[in-house]
Length: 199
Image (cartoon, rainbow, N blue to C red):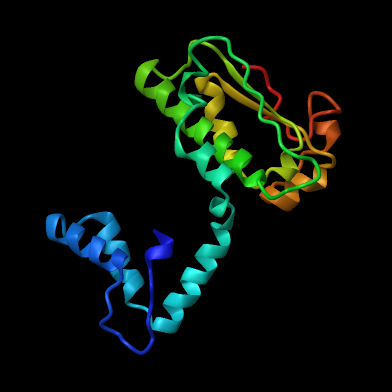
């Protein structure tokens, strides 16, 4: 879709394929969230639009690789089933190339969101099988949005995470969380007391 957006500075009324697509959606549902956001996007000057598109293209560049599109096109992981029965899911990334680390972060984000919803909607707030995430090299997978809140709220749903870091300073650098001093935790090995608490 990004490749179909063409902005022409010399012709303000030019409509690209995405403009046409949003015009059709606007006719069906003028209050659709996507339509309202696209209208705001189109308010910008042509140079600003081009800058936004270039930035977006740079951020989405890994998806220009066919193999990345192939593995993200369909759901083969079935993350929402992990709390139903004992299962092991291994997420393995390169330790020398960080290009695709964001995929691991995306998977964890999806996992936490899906399992949280499932626990609430299907199991009255608690999954039947505890899901424990051992997130090794946590500092190298990219930031998991709202991690502190997720860890605090997911424990009651039978979901926990153990973050493995090289140094406590990584926790503060990535998540702006000040690690609890070792003497204040139950064990000297815990860098964040709430992470290793048993359900």
